[in-house]
Length: 367
Image 1: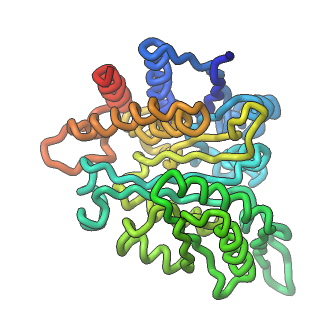
Image 2: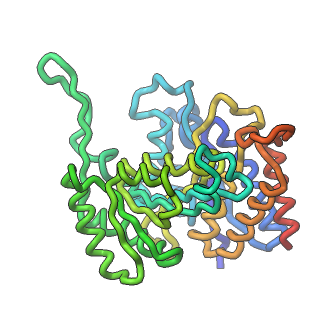
Image 3: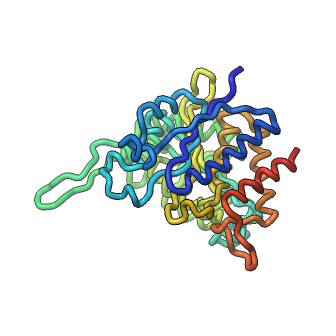
């Protein structure tokens, strides 16, 4: 049997720094757990534009279609702000999502006990928080046609179209129900059926799919009310499924419940390949953070936890994913903090590489 294949795309800003720490984890699994991965590396975003004049070269796209999983760091930066929209770094990421047909974006929001005080919400509201937002990723208002800026009379008009088919809603709903079956068997679907026809269809299709999952407790909520409830009492939720636009907003809101964007991973999953594994892209939620790039201040945990999600969802290594997640939890419990996690007086921040080394040491201790 061949080794699992992984394409690494570090990208821009802090992307290469945090990805270097994931490389340490991958090397540890090869040396200590006899788990070898066939790893290749390529360019995406601004780094790809600098070399190829495009944010994602066709050869890189072809590689992404054939590997078991893609792990991406971050894209973008002020250097590229004035580029044409079609070649901005973010277009490389969007192309990966679209052409790999990664329709289900999994965004966990988990609050480690050691970081409960870092949230802007009260500790009792977020302590023990563990929710999953499933965001539809390849349709909706970000991809709908017509779109653009046109002249109408004596002024310009910006147009974006919210569009969903039944099949697009059906497949992301099934992904959410399957995930709920493996967790707390609770699923809340969020839309705006009170004012949007696409929301009405969304609710109808999710309800119909729900009949096939009688063990899952299904509820519906308007997305704006959902945002309020996420801030009021987030632990009422287990799995949330929603469309592309609302998922973008709600997952970022949920991210801040945990105290830092530097802590949060994500997975984007598509249809199964011939080997039965879903096409998959894993990436930290944080951006490229150009203001701290190259300074050793970036928190690598989100990228490390993204690799843990790859272990779980692409490589069927759930026990090893648990091992890595527990190692991260132990490092935080031991008081290790990068600059974004400082709060206690007298705590000296560790560097990006020191945090990665600490996770490796915790993995060693798990043996």
